[in-house]
Image 1 (cartoon, helix red, strand yellow):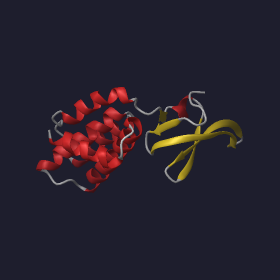
Image 2 (image 1 turned 120 degrees about the vertical axis):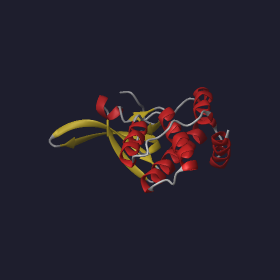
Image 3 (image 1 turned 90 degrees about the vertical axis):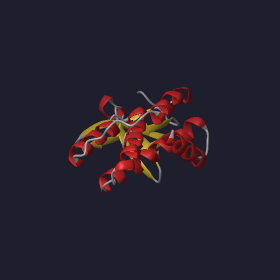
Length: 158
C-alpha cells in the first residue's frame, strides 16, 4: 500500500483529502481493499491498487513551491483560439494531477483572458485550477487562503 490512514492526499480531480480508513469491499463479486478518502464534505472510495493509487498523490512539499512560483511568474503560453483544442489542452494539463500543470493552467488562462473573453469552460477550468492551487498552497505552506490568493494575484501580474 502506498498510503496510510491519517495521511493527507491530493485526488487529481477533487483535490485535498485525508485517508480516514481502509475498507474491504466486494464489487462485481470480487473483494478488494479501498482507501476511504474524506474530501470536502464527502467520502470517496479509491481502490488500493496501482490503478486507484494513480489518482492520488501526496501534497506538494513546501520546498517545491519556489519552482511553482517561477511558473506562475513566467509569461503564459499561447493557447489555441479554437475552443475545442484549448479545452483538450487544458484538460490534459489538469489530468496530469500534478501542481505544476495546475499552475500552467492558471497562468495561461489568466494571460489568455487579458486579450480574449473566456468562455464558460475556460472560466470553469480556471476557477477549479485556482481552487486546487490555493487549497494545496494553503496546506503545504501553512498560510491562509486569503494570503495565498493575494500572493497568487501579485505573481500573475509580474
